[in-house]
Amino acid sequence: MIDLLVSILSNPSIIIALIAGLGLIALRKSTSDIIKGTLKTLFGFLILQQGAGIIVNSLIPFSTMFTEAFGLTGIVAEDNAIAAAVQVVLGKETAFILIFSFLINVLIARLTKYKYIFLTGHMMFSFAATMAIVLSQMGLSSIMTIVLGSIIQGISMVLFPAISQPSVRKVIGNDNVAFGFWGSSWISLSGWVGGLFGNKEQSSEDVKVPKSLDFLKDMSILMGIIMIIVYVVTAGFVDTDTMNEISGGINKYQFAIFEALGFVVGILILLMGVRMFLAEIVPAFKGIGEKIVPGAKPALDVPIFYSYAPVAVTIGFLAALIGGLIVTFMSSLLPVAVLPSVIGLFFMGGAAGVFGNARGGLRGAIIAGFFLGLTFSLLVALAYPLIGLSEYGISGLWFASPDAIIVVIIIKLIGLLFGVPL
Amino acid sequence: MYILSVCGMGFGTSLMLLMDIQSMAKEHGYTVDGEATDLGSAKGKNCDLMVASSEIAAELSDENVPIVSIDNLLDKNEIKEKILPMIEKLYKGV
Figure (cartoon, each protein chain N blue to C red):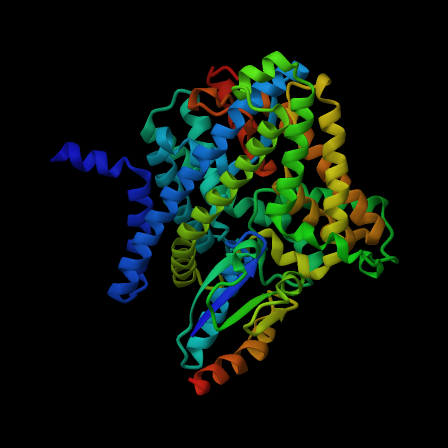
């Protein structure tokens, strides 16, 4: 009986569904809403794991191709896929860090003048998974991983919004909301750099962006195009015999295109799962946070800033993509080849454009986007040796959130003091 | 009454927008069901109303339900001014 309970409570999908159910009960929802919400959370979590499986499977042949073609390891920076893929091993740690870090965040907001409640759900999930991976790899027990991980994440959920708030004020003109996104520090820094070299007189919003670039707003299309290019170019560099072994005799370009599409489909399924499980959890968190913390300021996802300078979003993204590609072409000098990671470059580059425009106009937006794409990709490449993911059967993926990577570096340095090698 | 809120990914800003709409509607005595979704999945979904930020709303042009475009997602007044009349109209129309 006890064994069964332990086994049930070690299953992350059940923990997450229970959290959602308890949240809905706390908010005094109707019985049908509670049943619906709990089940949808459970479905969402299981869908997300299936998506991760597809992504990991489409990256295995790609990693082999890339190594054969260029003699390097190639990675795409994408947190959600890693978080979902490690659930089999670190599911219960991730789930408990997710919930306890939120409670610590609420506690800090209640007791200090920093009233930020971090509400970007998928980021809470990926950060929790990152903490679980790092701390467990440093040899900590499951309980210690949960305790330390929750404390570090709870502090980060208040600290990073606090760091970026001066920049947020520059963009939105008030302090009503904060920036809850694990790229906030880097985006603020990029905006500041854009302000140094920019010119506020000429706003990015006076530029006419061609309508034909509108398709960039649809993530799946953009990612499909970029991934097909990356896979096909890689396949082109692999010699035919080796390629035949990898593809099982299918024409190498056909194989490359469909593996690339498989990757995107995996991402789409993963995101559908993320949507389903966040739809229940985030409102519960928001309700609880607002009940406990008077004057709570929600820390929200990055697109809230896009409407302040929509043109700067496109400009920032394109500049970031160029910056990222430069790092991809420098791969031979770096520990790893960072492939253009569309989601990260789009959302962070776009925001860097907005922040750069607020401080330095059009030129500020271009410089901020470029700086972000270049330095973010460099950060990923240089930090790559710090965490290996092969023990979870993951190849071709690595972490994408600058704030989380900074925290990981700090944890590793503190670990050194306690005699844990990097 | 079912509202679809749309953003690029379908779980960040659209979810916040939906929660803001639901709490605003509740203050005025209306219960609104809905879901947050991404641009790719929004097409052809069954709903009474679609709501999105202005840059996303431009992509939703050929739907056969009303589409409300919000310029500033953080402006609760704008959300109320644009959406409350629609909710009232839908309720009266039923």
